[in-house]
Image (cartoon, rainbow, N blue to C red; front, top):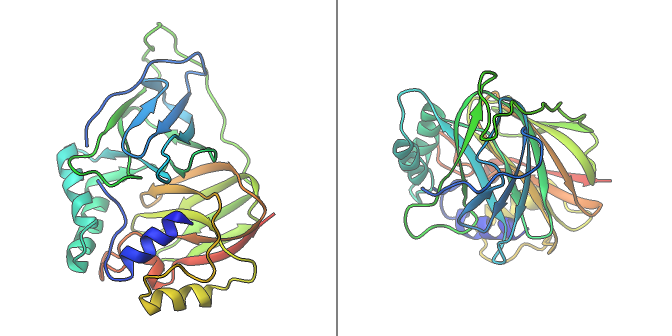
Length: 298
């Protein structure tokens, strides 16, 4: 809900979504060669491993950021695109000018692939499991907007013929079984198949033609999507009446066609799914255009 409040205050008047840098990976751990622990502190990401095997990869994501939630994003520039170009696109997408923000979203779709990862707060970790091909990936924590170039941490995904630093090929994982599926669509909506759990795994699938993310934020019992839309339409800078101060988690930005599995534990209750990526035509944040869905986690 802290993210909802921050976004509502900033985005009721402007278009926003992503923020946009350079750093290093941490040491290896004794865990599976297809698993990696990811820790954000609001501005930097530390990894337990500098490389993992291609195939199914499990990310155990947590945060030490006392000032709010870590928004940990993983991306890969497309062929013939460098990292600097992607970061410039991110800065556009974060612009307060709607036309610039819309262009930023279009440019991000053109220039990069986004693989989610997670939005988590201290004490509310999550696990993201997905299938990755061989290559170099970059992670950043956008929880605290950087004053300069944000820090990037590099993860190498090895192909079948590669070995890790200890000469091992590693072991392999399977995709988890999901209790429900959330599709994010080209109509800028969330479509839920099944019942979302308070504790369990959901599959998040971007079936649209643009980038999206999905925050799961707590709201008061009885809150409706009409109330949430009315709040956004009001341009109010005050906390919404449906505010609940509690833990939240989310799947971070995914490119069109991507899917990943989000495993989390939240208190049972009423929540809202939200996406604040800037629309690629109007520059308006998707949530303000109706991309929110009230759900009950049991």
